[in-house]
Length: 245
Image 1 (cartoon, rainbow, N blue to C red):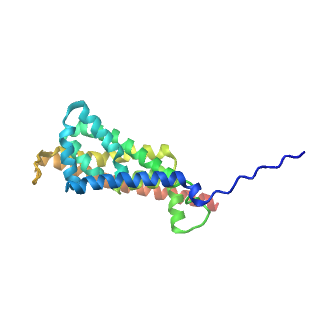
Image 2: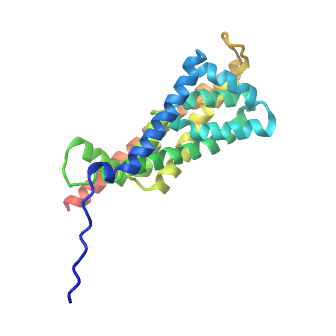
Image 3: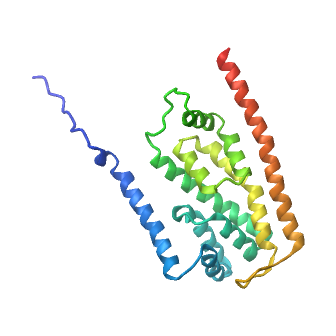
């Protein structure tokens, strides 16, 4: 007797995307929980950071709390800038940069894999030449340079990480470009935080020397972005020429 092949029942849309829907619901609840806490207590993002400052000054546990909060920050869409400035104020310029680089790379990895998860099966390269496909192709082919430029010009930090995962670019060039490209921006924001000599909720008193250093790093980051932009354009032109030949 010939065994009949078992035909698996076709799944509907909800069955195919059940895991993503559950993850999306959890994500929405997490964001809603943060927003609820902030609204109930009438707190702005800056005021939330002010409350965290007390915890962050508590030795080892303060560092650990900072790294964990920074790492999970993309999940509640909390601005990275506020925490970076707070780290400069609490930990100083050197330790602040060190802790923030560690934390930001963890947070970037989390955001990347969240985007990777939700981007599965979407925006596949179908060979078309529309704007979206061209940009997606560019990011996949020149991942390191493109992500580096995005970090240098201070594009929304989490949006870049989510987009990189969503487009399913390779993780290694993404995280290397993030680690290197984020250094100038991290130093600039940490420097600004370190320049704050007193902060009691009113206008802070700033150290002009440290503030000047922070501004110089900011300008340097923009200059780096132009260099990498030029390099990326040259790489793209060489690639297109090779394809024609």
